[in-house]
Image (cartoon, rainbow, N blue to C red):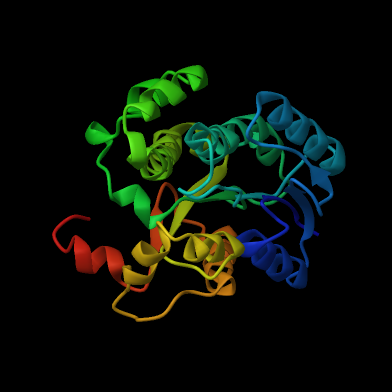
Length: 261
């Protein structure tokens, strides 16, 4: 039975992935603030360390797959917390749990991790990302000062900047992870019907922006649709997919950036 750890397992994309993988025969170790086998706050170094230790204890130090779904949206406060969860909460678990994934008993390339980024990661280029320098230096304490300079746009910059940096971090790890026999990819959803999205829709400031963000396929994705892609990327059918970002957004990225890919 494959053993899979999932952050953000109690709601949204994480909950849908949890259900889908359990139905496929995985033993899932869920990680979330509450309602999971491992309850941890990934916005803090202490919470991340607890999550890693608890996962290693639950799994016996061996994982077959890892899915990082936990994240905060642009309306979360303070903006620096968005970066702490979306970037540091993901990257620290990736690096800390790679040895456990490397001990998977499956064939080479059997072990895999999928990180949930966002189509917003494409809204900034790395050389225009104001968080690039501090995140490359792993300087979490400097994030708030960078975001403060953006005033009312701090939330957007925290979200797009953290997701852009997260995708870059995954791509920069392809050699190390391949040498360990573990595949690593990201998925980049567009607008998905999750509790986080509903909170944004209810916000008088960003709600209209979300409603105006309409994809060529003019509806919002269901969490199960993102979970299906994650499940595929973890499977042996995806054994040669490594370091890729799979956009699953109903066509919005192609419509807004047709010449950039």
